[in-house]
Structure formats: C-alpha cells, structure tokens
Image (cartoon, rainbow, N blue to C red; front, top):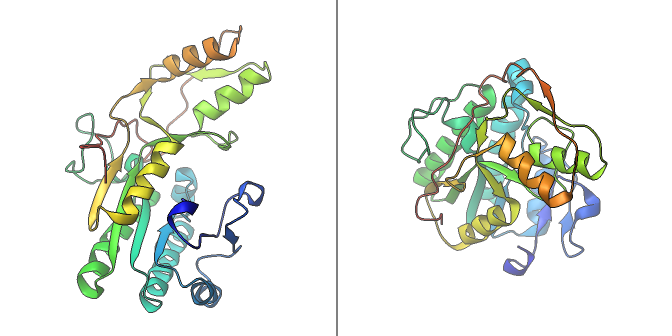
Length: 261
C-alpha cells in the first residue's frame, strides 16, 4: 500500500517486518495526546484502522478491557480523524464475529447481526459509530468484514491460525493434532487479497460494510491434506477431542458478493 499513499504510519505489529519507507509509531490508541501528536506530524488523508484486541476468549474473560481498547480507543482515533480532517476512515471488522451463529451459508451482508462475544459486539459497535460519524460529520468510511486471514509471517502460537500452525509443524517435522473429526469448515482468505480489498477501499466503497472472504468453505482435513502434499510431510495427524469453542467463535463462510469494493 506504500505506492498508494505518501505517508504510511504504523502503530502495531512486528517492527522487523516494516517497509523501510513506513513511519512507525509505537503507542496505545487509548492515549489521546500521543495519538494527536501522530496526527499533527502525519497530516494523513486516510486512516486504515486495524489496531485492536483480537482475542475472542480474552474478550469473554474481560469485556471491560475489550471495550476499552476496541470501542473507546477507536473513538479516540475517530475523533482525531475528524479534528485533523482525514478524508476517509477504513475499518477492519470481523465477519467471523459480528454475524453470530450463521442461519445460512455463505453469509452475505444482509444476514442478521447477532454477535456472541464482547469482541463481536465491539466490532459491530464501531460499524454503528462509523455510520453515525458519516451522517453527523461527513466522514467517509468503508468497513471490511474479514473471514479467516492467512499468509506469510502469521503468528502460529494462537488458536486461530491453523494454516500457519500446520506449516510450522510440518517444516519442523513435528507431530500435529487435528481436533475432532477435522471436518470443521472455515473460509480462508489469503492476506494479499485482503490487501487488495484495502487498496480498493482507498478510492471506493464509501459508506459500505463489505464481506472480505472467498465464499468457499474448506475443512481442516482438506487443509492438512493439501499442505502435506505440498511440503512432503509424512506423518499422520494425531487425533484429539474437539475443545469447547470460544463463545462467539463460529464456523462461517462469507459471501463476497460482487468481489468487494
């Protein structure tokens, strides 16, 4: 995205992966004075907001902290965007969290909203605020509801990155585990496609909330089989009981409609 903008500022992630042309600010979005300094220095045209508390289980254990970061922190960012005349606000929402238990698949943007976790509530709350800020103050926005994003440099220590976990263990020739029968289906989208959606949102999709997914569900067993063949892994997976799912963490496939913005 560096080719699309004169200044890119990053507030999170791993510093060693930053493009050398990016300006990096390490801060907490809840710290309004520090954030305003960044706005003054940057004179940004667009804010692309991915900063968040993203752990669904943690949001259930500590909903106050989740709301403090994902709602209050995001409001501070919205206020800064207004004050410093940002042209557009792009928001990373969650297709896996805001819809709740799917009534049908693939899930389109008209599916009822029924989040089952504080994390899902916080993401949908920001979508409401974006609509309100657009109506009241004229701030342009696009919200992107991601499915399960995968790709290079993904953290393989968490519970969500099954592709990264499998690749890491296969490359190390370690044993790996598949929980349950392995037929759990998710919508996996490659990170480059997510980047493309964000680039398109720079100049389109104003006032829209869009699914960013493939519309195709793939089982854990299929993911394992494909990676096993590609990497020459010779071990069979170890079976394990299916753990209790995190509240609000649903198996979902998103309907991307006409291809996004």
